[in-house]
Image (cartoon, rainbow, N blue to C red):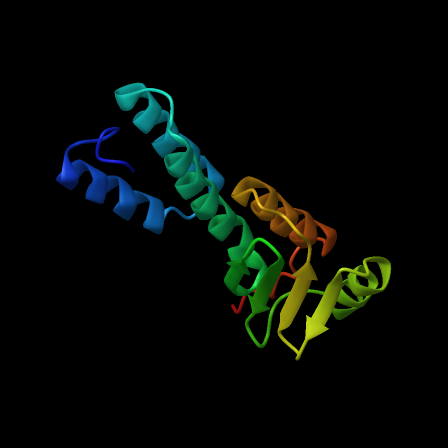
Length: 140
């Protein structure tokens, strides 16, 4: 959050902590509403910050441990036992020439996307195409 948008450093740190600990999109939406109510329309860098955290919350159930989204290539790294159906990954790679499997736990998406918002959307689209994460049975 830029200094000229939210001048109080303690308040900014509080918002960062709330964003980092948000567990679902509703918590991020509530925080976004609070920020906009207090300070007005989000500047672009603040919108990017919100988008990144929203993406983190969406990606976690898929077993995503890291997303590197550079303008020309995006890497999505999954944990070893990611709850994703392997056939969905194979279908994704076969249907999209710009998506490749790198090793056993990483997807490489080769796309020239200069806008961070477009890169975040690409990651969301890829995750959505993997279907719902496989739920593990609860241990009684």
